[in-house]
View (cartoon, rainbow, N blue to C red):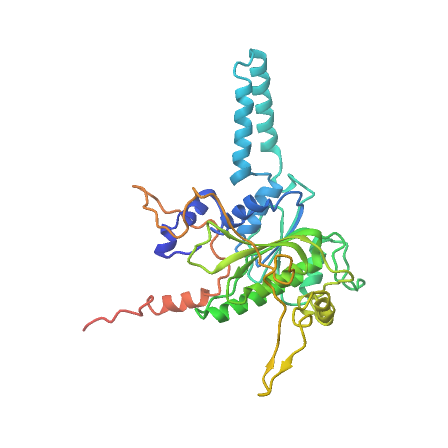
Length: 385
């Protein structure tokens, strides 16, 4: 979590520390879940580029500890309120029974182990940076762009998997959801940052194709740019629905957004592997032949007397045309929630809380040590003699 004055004035930055989240990005996943119901019937999840672990923390608290946030929590409170309203004048015996049931529920909650609340849940988190332990989460320190990561992930998902005897890089028990909040260190050159981010997303997608089950979901961060429509079309090859979402906790001044892919439907005969880019490789031409090509369906080219060739393309403006597809853009989060770009005035006597989980091995650690040795950001002060 950042320490600049802008971050300190950010409501989500303070709210994350008050609610015990490792980073403010936890609200992004919660708001995406409010819109798309990502965690419904989900028991096996892979979190890519997980450090410092805020998204894995959301998975741990929602899937393992059965905690509810956002709309789910509001609906729960409304249901409890309606239940109380239906019993406006309960009898004395019913009051005693309800108090006894409440005490039993509290005792069971206190004695129940957090890591065994839902033993059928399997969560695996991967990142190059070390991740502090989380209840019920398996953490791996690996590179998602390297082919050797697939056997490590399959071994974490299925302990009986043997990479030496198995030649198939596919999960025996596929996962329901793959999420990725990874992003490169931005340089300020937007075209370069968007390109690097797209390559990171392709790496996450390539790994997700190896472990996702048919009907699974894929969520990843993207940088919106000039040619981002091509990325949407590539994802549409593997998923039935592709949405672009912008959570309210994501700053409007940022180019980041999140691609939400629902209902994984791999093409017939498709087998994913990190040895082949995007899991397509030599079969890319075959998949392209399945798509309608507007140029190949157009009329033959005609050359005039000046030698200029005119290519007549098919009219794409018709409503029945399937060649042009635009991914829907959805804004997530309650409109009454905090504005991530606004600076809210701190209350009188406000005490700034420390981060829930400081960085374990930040890449700028060496730079901070050198700056301290030199006396701070502006060097050692010069003492006049």
